[in-house]
Length: 173
Image (cartoon, rainbow, N blue to C red; front, top):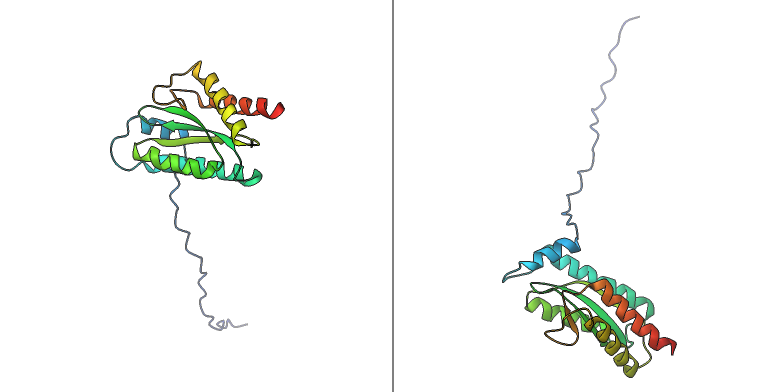
């Protein structure tokens, strides 16, 4: 049997898709953002800090989406900068109010690290009473040199507990 040549077949080169371009991944670290803000000078905020701030605001938006955006609530903000602080305030529209705080903080080289909103309160009077109670509890442990709402070098978790407890006490009664 004689060897015969196989009919010539076109060479098929497999085509593989090009790999997707690598996206820059930035690890969002609140601890790193706090550290960066301690020594911040003049200029734009570092990208890591901006991401932490955006993540905190998105967390608030997600919380409010479940229970409604327009209710009287207390909010607790952890603010990083040369002089870190915790702020406890009230607002009927906390998402917008926190946005305005972020603008003001950034102007003075401070950044939002974490934010918390409490359960809704029935009216402005109840919200004001809860705020006064939360401020009194925080004031026993932390200094308030700039305003009655801001507590220097305060613990954010303790601020959340004070705000939530003040709201719970008024909601019970």
